[in-house]
Length: 541
Image 1 (tube, rainbow, N blue to C red):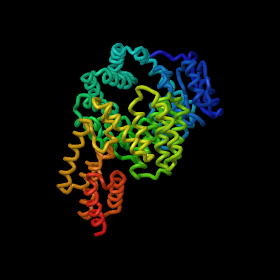
Image 2: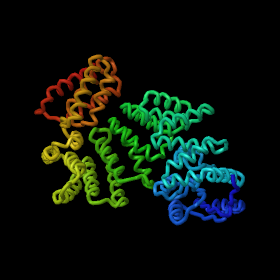
Image 3: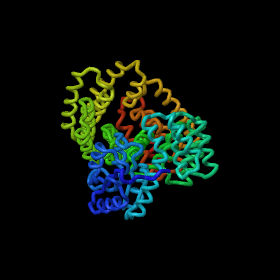
Image 4: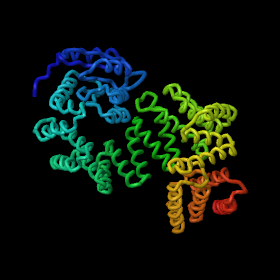
């Protein structure tokens, strides 16, 4: 291993406190570092990295106003401003769990706790620079996306006896997986595990089984990893993917929730939780996760306007299902949309969607005149444009429904059904606004779930029946039959002696939802009345 020529190295120190910057700069110069630049905040780091390539970046986690160190590292990678050979060391004085896990989660090259001493700094830098020296040729091949050459270089390093062979093995395993070389990956991870039970190798082997379709085996191994090391976040991500392939939506959500509890500052995990929970009909969890996504996105490169739209849609659905009063969400949602319109410089189509979402939440909050004005402005555009995306039309219909303009909403809906009658993907999206699904996929899904739920009900497995019906209720929120089936299962539960406050509240809420969907002329109104009477008697007795 060659000697490191410190005089040729260029460092960047990022901290909002000048005392720390100058103290660390003096330490580095005493080590013989050739050039040391300084940055006072996240924006300064990004600017300097656009203009220079650094050998090592020492960045504090808390950079004052603006992006923190985690967000800076994420954006450097996102914008490809951080070559593989550049080392990024995150530093923090905050030892709270959220900050420590956020720091580890973004995978810097190293993580140091303040106070930083000269000896500590020298040891870490020397070790990392030696590793860079050993792996330099592999880094260069990866930068050029020459994976075949990188595999050859790493294969040689991984089989050698030196202190960085483990790092080479880990990199080689990742490359095998990325290239679909599952047998070679399995052989590598097995060899590593014969010597030491390293978590990354155990995870790698589970990923091989996952890719090979051995999902039960992969799931068992992944569960064991998180049980033995409950803070190992990458395992939760793979476990959630494994449950997803198995079609276990509830377990996907539970797994993502566990990872979010460990690392709540991860915008990508919060975003995924919002999506998964919404699909599962858990609007409360979805709303909280999407609220966190929007908040974390204020300074994140992973933020986009769709995050805000998603938050607004789930907020509106939560109001419609009486989970929250409109007044509790109105100001928050409208402000988030306003900020998104300014920040993301939305094209006209997305601006129209934003206005229609705003109109929907305003209508729910009793601001009818403001909502009508926004809808009229949007309609002016929609009526003069060709090829308006279906999503914009859907936002328009839901805004009109929130405003109580049911006739116009129904007319638009029928027009869309005719226009997309041969487009099954579009019909699946329209199903969410219909009392009965029209797409082949959703009709089959609804029939299958109803059969399963009724069978569970007949076996007096009421909670399982309710869960079964809930799987489709959020997909078809206007399907009266599904809502009635849920009420019937809740009544069965009440009659079986489960008259707790939670079950009674769920029953009352379900009945209120049905009452908002149908009137005396509806074909299922008589059944609704019978269930109302049965529920009242069951709750009273």
